[in-house]
Length: 74
Image (cartoon, rainbow, N blue to C red):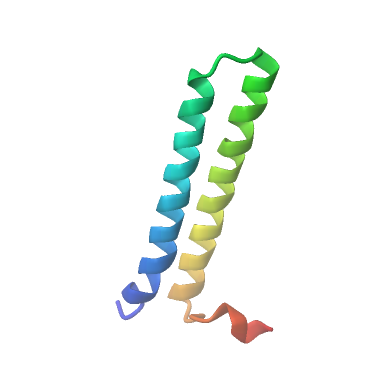
């Protein structure tokens, strides 16, 4: 449980970014635009939300395994 403090920042950043993309999705759905444009404007933020969640899960796994600093690899 010593890694809880290391998890706070990545989780907060991921939540803020996901909320931002949900906001964009909401505005996109409410706008009047052609269907192909609307589909594209919905798929891109959904894909980015998926990527953010995937990266967050990977970061949580790294922190739990003891890899606190990503920059030590480089």
